[in-house]
Image (cartoon, rainbow, N blue to C red; front, side, top):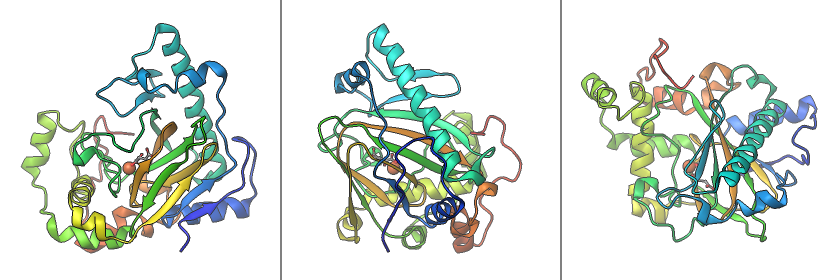
Length: 302
Ligand SMILES: O=C(O)CCC(=O)C(=O)O
Ligand SMILES: [Fe+2]
């Protein structure tokens, strides 16, 4: 199976026909990466200066932007650069949302924008704990932000100005990954769920779904024998291209590259066209138990 589904779009807001959007959502929800080789996110001269890694605070992997509050975090820029960063990231957030609405019209009204990030630190050789090491294959799960079954969809654009591609690897299907790691994971108790919340380790109560996803994420990254032996596909994602992927489903690793913009979206399970392909459905089927809270959690990601 080719992991990439190519779509020859060259403009962020040009309409596409129904057949293309039906093929796109089918590919996306079945674990492919929607690859837009001709979709460039262009920067002006001032914005190109913002790609210097010295602007990113040393303790962090990236500069982040909250499209709800318009807040930029993690930068060490001047006041003027801070404003430029704000405009750049706001534009990327808006263009990404517009793009997703064009490609996946069925997601409109249901999609929830999360944070965006500007990644200007070279991945290869970056020091981090194994849990934060995205150069190891993993599926995404956020330890402090439970999603309670919501999907994690990410739009990426390689904005490197020196011809440097981003190199990714992908691994096994979500079901194969889940079957391999689930036997190593104990259930979470109600007490543990509430203690995590009480001590503000999680922003909302960690659902059993989040517990299993986080454990799969951590156990995949920790297991070096697995990392070395699993069959991988290497992807070259060139500058001036963009791609979209359910990072909670597709086992992925970012091996090298520098200069990417990324926007995260959350999708409720009801927005999916093929819910049977979702990590939630696959985990509930394997574990034979419901994994999410049915009621809306106060202060949840929505
Ligand atoms: O920075 C990248 O290219 C991808 C890193 C990653 O694992 C992610 O964004 O989920
Ligand atoms: Fe990831």
